[in-house]
Length: 310
Length: 108
Image (cartoon, rainbow over all chains, first blue to last red):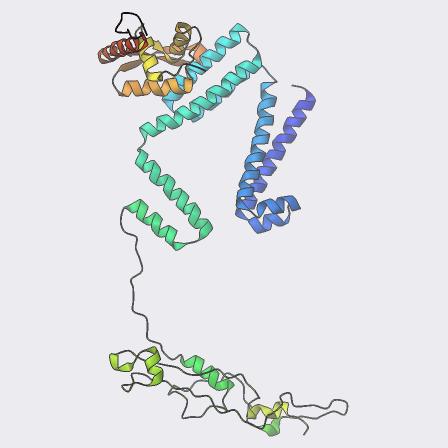
């Protein structure tokens, strides 16, 4: 083998190794690996099919180059060596019978003085046919039904990995165990309940606009917004160049306080209960009619902070 | 285009001559048909295994050979049932290939 050819083969080996490593990185860490690739690679890695296609194409090109370089160089004995290495991956019967016949045929061709490329093509054909025959042989030896289930399970696991759907996992479970998939026990929908914290937050925002009568009976909660009770402790000194203005324009009309009405197990059918389920039939009939008002002005207690200087 | 004949039927016919191993059986078919028929080795070995599973042929391994890298040859030969099946099949093929006679005495 010439020096140049050796260098080309070494370069191709390193390139194929780096390419395959990059593809593996892209598959498992798509966003991170994609950043460092070129624009073309970025476009390819954004699609899984394109990524697989590029990987196959790359491997095929490298394979064709390698096989071409191998066929056109070296002696026919390397074909026998290749078949001997290939025999390590085959079942005993296949490697003794079929591969033995192929090695015998290759040795006969070498003794006849046939061209090297023909001997190597014969070796490659033997590799191909023994691979096919191995699949056929294993199919007869292993339970086909078991193989089908394993293959289906692998496909579904891959699909579930990409889709992330729990339905696929349920289907996988039912296929591999022959029983109905486990489903979560159906529970009756919980009755609408009042979230005390939510009401407390609403109360803190709009404390002034709510009356005690309209509030539901809840346990006292801590205030969310800080309130300043002592106005005298605040030191507000307006400067000359900055005239502080109140940040919120007050309107003369104070909006009417929104109502919060909670009707739980009300025996008398009300219009609201008629919409959501009447309490007479046993439904909880809980209705929360509490429109969330947008804060139109700050609360009175916080005016000491904002209305300054006037 | 090669002849469209079943691989198993062909192997049964060439095994009537005597036992043989895979490579030898392929060469025998090629010789008997003057190279018209060439069995693919990817089909021969699975077909031989199927014939063995059906009880029509039996196989045994000979001693290891250096030209095979120390591997033995596996020879196949017909069983009694296989011989009957091969003869019945040969008669059927001959009848199929014989031109039909017309009611007036000549061939069609």
